[in-house]
Structures are given as C-alpha cells and as structure tokens.
Length: 314
Figure: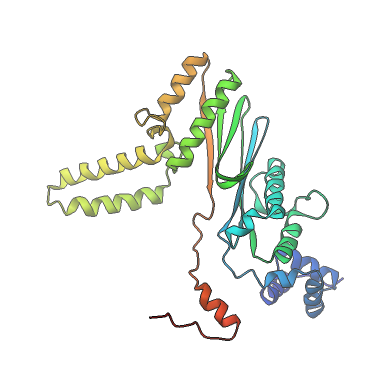
C-alpha cells in the first residue's frame, strides 16, 4: 500500500473541500491515487457536499442533554434558520449532544464517534449536507460533571425540547436536597442566559480582555485632565467594575435586580442546610463569534437566472 502523506491529504482537501478524515480514507481506499481518490469522494457524495463548505453557517441549533450528574451542550451550525426546523437536523443535534456525554468537548473525537444507526458523526453530518442541501458544521461542545450534586440545563428560544438558540449548563456541587438544587440551578441558568457572564469569577476573566479594557479606561481617564494619581485610581475603579459586571458570582441576579449571585447561592445553602458550590457553567449562544456574510438575495436569484437585478420602481 502506498504511503499516505500529510501533503497528499492536504492537496486532496484543497481540491475537493472534503474533510481531513474523508480525504485520508479516500487515499487509503485508492492506494494513494489522487484522481481516483477524487472520484471516490464524488461517488460517496462527499465532494459534492464540500462544494457548500465555503458558505457561512451561522444559524442552526444548540442542543443540551443531562444524564445523572453529567451534562453536555453542543452547537451545530447551518446556513439558514429554516434548517433548524428540519426534523432530520434536529434529530442529529439531539443525538450529538447525547454522544457528547461520553466523548466530552473534543470535536475531533465527537466527529469520530459512532452515530446511532451506523457510520460516524462526521459521516452522517456530511450526508446531511448532501440531503438537506446546506453547509453544516459541528462547531463546539462542552461537558460538565459533578461528584455529588446536580447539573441543570436550560434552553432559551427553544425550537424543540433540549434544542434552541441559547443553551446553558449549571453545575452545582452539594450533598443537599436535589430538588432544591435543581430549582436553584434552573434560576441560575436563566440568569446566565440573560446576563451572559464572561467567567465564573473575576480572576478567571481573560487577561488579554482585561488589558484591552484597561487601555480603554486609561484613555478615557487621561482625557479628564486630572492628576496622574487620580487617573490611576479611575482606571483601577473601571477595571474593578468591569470584573464585577462580567463575572458570574459578582453579577446582580436578574430575578430580583439587587442580590449578587454568590449571595443567592449562599442563601440557598443556608436554606437547605448543606454547602452549595457553583462549580462551573457553560453558555452557548448560536452563531456567536461567527462573522456572517452579508448577501443580497434578490441579486443572487437574478444572477442564477441570468438576469440583472431589477431596478426599483420609482
């Protein structure tokens, strides 16, 4: 058997747009013959699906699953919101979230996981691209687990049970009453969906983000014309405020608009008679961080029909 090099896999990916694992398999199946590998991908429908890979997929669904003391959240993207209503797509997201309970947050491992009914997650996703007719991608996953306590999920703007635009997981460590913990976790998850904290605690905020905020605050403070020592205190105050407003534990609870989250957790711990630790959370909002391409649908239709975009009527 011919040696399959990284360079040949890279070349096949560039020529077909197919996934790395599919390209490697194609080359193995064709003994390294590049043209035959391209034909192999075409016969499997993989190259055809790859033609859609350049199109921005920023819609889709976030899916959550909870099993015992474990919870998973995944994001699967599509090009249009219409696909999110497709039962085939919804089943895929639901099954992938279930599989993530076993594989964790590694997308490569999740893509290689065996999908119910046959094939891998990656292979089924590729087949879905071909049958549904839109580019789709498995973007990210997260897994939370506690030793004793609960993991609670919440979906905002739900399209179906466990599927929606925003998915949240909350992990609470405690030996206390599980029903009370579930109720607390649900309220905290709803807060997280609305308030979008950037970290659990102020010290966990990204250092680069803090430096960026410090630079902005410094420039603003310098414009005040105040002495350097006062400017320094103004900057420190601005950063302290930023940490409080963006760290979950110091945020003000959206349910009453007055109590800090850490105090909400402490009050519940006192109520149930057992320590409660908000160990972790995960919040996925559909399409966040994806740069969406602006498109003129009328122009695209006109171009496809071989006509110019009609002039507006005066």
